[in-house]
Length: 182
Image (cartoon, rainbow, N blue to C red):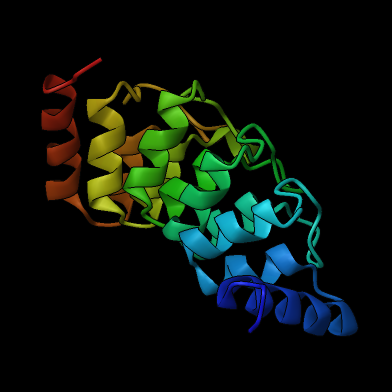
């Protein structure tokens, strides 16, 4: 009888296979977007704040790829939510740009500043609007993101929505501001 649970054996085999191809075990489970696999990898010693082969932390990689399950598992297992990528964008910026509303909520609940500026003076709201992530953008506004913050080009979120031809979206954002919860 095998003394190891099947899942542990699978993780050990995965770890050995990844060691031979240069990837860290946490990188493979992040790519699978499996919250439980992330937790299992962490319980086996994976570092949630390690630098991956692309230079990002696992949480940044998950946020950039829109992998909300992996991102949630990483956050729950202590990943540094204040990390920024090489360009200066935060996890919140990437979560907003990829439409991960739930992850934005987790990050805000853990204290990230909603109007933190990244390169070019853009906020998470600017990026959500530019990528036409309407539900995420309205969520951010309802939770306190300012419609008045301007990027380095002088544009606020309403200007960005108008520039991409989304007048209705711009009006929805104004309405969301009236429905603020915080």
